[in-house]
Length: 298
Image 1 (cartoon, rainbow, N blue to C red):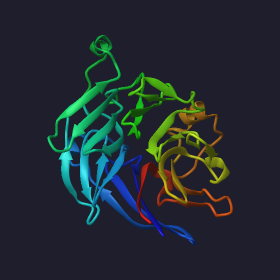
Image 2: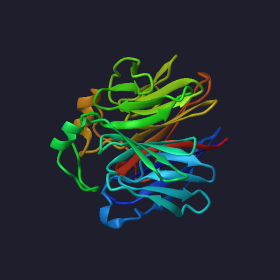
Image 3: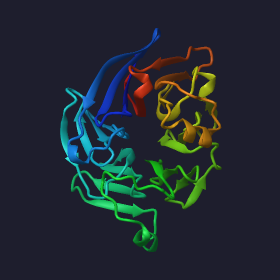
């Protein structure tokens, strides 16, 4: 039996959700769901919930839109917090060599935090002249338009930093300063380095690596805003956020999708074509946002 951890939230709430889901030959089921309140309520943002997550032993580092928390997987309490005045609309997070790498989407930067010293290094995706023209924002304000909208960051086996850029619909190898692959068919979201391959999702439902691609519509009855990816030996888990009135028009523009309304789901896609795929609609699916997925155990 596999167990996965899923992060997300609700369109109409300030808190985040961490869900534990188990998967056996009978399908998937929710073991437990845990409400995680934003630790600094005065800057919490409606509808953001918990975005990126990165497992760290018996804990998980989790991003709210403007703070990072460390959560115990034993009782799902917050045991640590990292704050910075320029955290805004945080997305993906990766842990590597005792450093956190964060896609600081609203700030148009990649932030690197040394977990031992708490020193922060910031890689700006906008030059100094451009930043001077950009208005000053508080942590709970919408900073759009984004010129890059960095969605994810990962470290490959050669220690190169790889980032996903929504606006360009491209993946950039910062270490070698080169594009990886071609422009994707819709905005790229989850980018992960796994066993020497770069995997990614697009919000339109493509899952791909260096050798192969899958279309989520071949396995799931209705597609939502695709994000969240966990790759295991047997298959992969992919998340989709609900499509509703507030996001359907934009979703159609960037994906050419015909979806009008659908609830949030988790889909399992097996690598063995003779095995069965499963989909699980989460509770209160029409209001739910799914963001990240991590494998907890086999």
